[in-house]
Image 1 (spheres, one colour):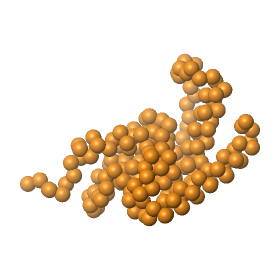
Image 2: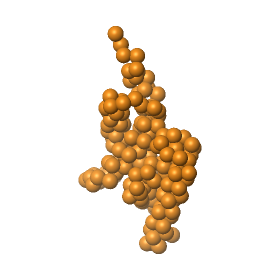
Image 3: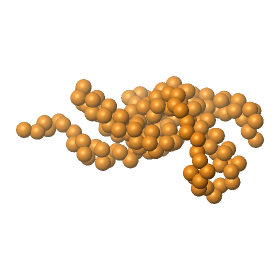
Image 4: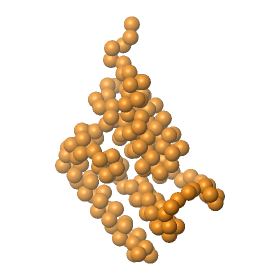
Length: 169
């Protein structure tokens, strides 16, 4: 006899896989890393379900994707050099280099934020969650979300000012 409280994992994965991957990819900027994080997130969600009921699958999965992506971003890893022809772009090389440098800076800066600030920043700016949705997802008040978002922005602005003085136009 099937357990009536057991979630339908196929439906959960079908419904949320794209968002989990998108959150991971936006933070990590790497498709293979985003795929790895996505798999880890669903495995962790399954384990958490075994420990107790899940109130919001979307909230849990987005939060896990954010936190696990930040964990992965914080880990040092070897970088492989690109070969000529690995990328095709119609953007001027100096513009592409500046955009790449800024993306990498933002990833590193977000990774250095406290977990709650990073999660709120990613959910609000990258996933376009409302403050209310973030509050429900993280289990905090809307005021706590606004405070965390403000602090995250202030930290990032402070770091950007230092970065900009370092030689960017």
